[in-house]
Image (cartoon, rainbow, N blue to C red; front, top):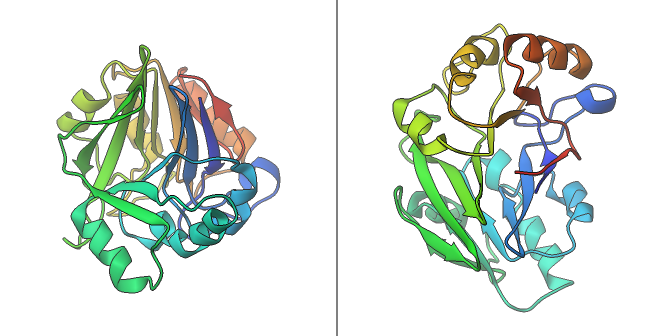
Amino acid sequence: MIHFLGTGASGGTPGPGRSRRRESSALVNVAGKVVLVDVTRDFPDQAGEIDRLDAVLLTHAHRDASGGIPALRRWWLERSREPLPVYAQRETIAAIVRRTKRLDHCRFVPVSAGGRHRLGGCTIGPLTVPHARERRFPTFAWRLTAGGGTLVYASDVARLTEELERFARGAGLLVIDGAMWRRRIFSHLTIDAALPVLCGWRVDRIALTQIGKTAPAHEQLTRAVKRTCAKATPAYDGMEIDF
């Protein structure tokens, strides 16, 4: 199961009800393990929804994905003395080390695209996806598989690629960048343009995250997304989906 702690763009997305979104992050319960994907600057608020953590996966070094690492330490100090395994690219780890003074709560595990790692009964693996222009900010999508269920989490994607389509193939749930609506930006998908392509991918369900200010209100967005792709839906903070 995935529990969305935040589904908004960098800086959060204002609005009432389900249209109000914190920076994008998710808590994944899989094979008896609890995994946090990205640690945002909204982590102090999101932390109230987290009772336990076994590992952290980081997509990239931008602060909306990893700027909550210092706040994670405060959560950790109240619960554990064993450092948390944090899986990330070497460039991401280096960026965090440069800007963070205390990291005794993190046991960094450098990973490369194409690698596979075991986390209890779960297999995790990353793929490099296009996002930031700066080479110091390479970005991962993550694939988590256990017990016949597969989640692919790709919150920051500039454009769809054949590699990402193959990476997502067979997933019960694809969580993907839904940042832009009827407008374009170099670093994120324009979801109304990307959805017709995504709907043809061999995945059971699609959930949009990283939803930005160009999107209409949640209910209107949901209807528009469903008209384009019946198996897709915009996620919202607090939403839970089994995969």
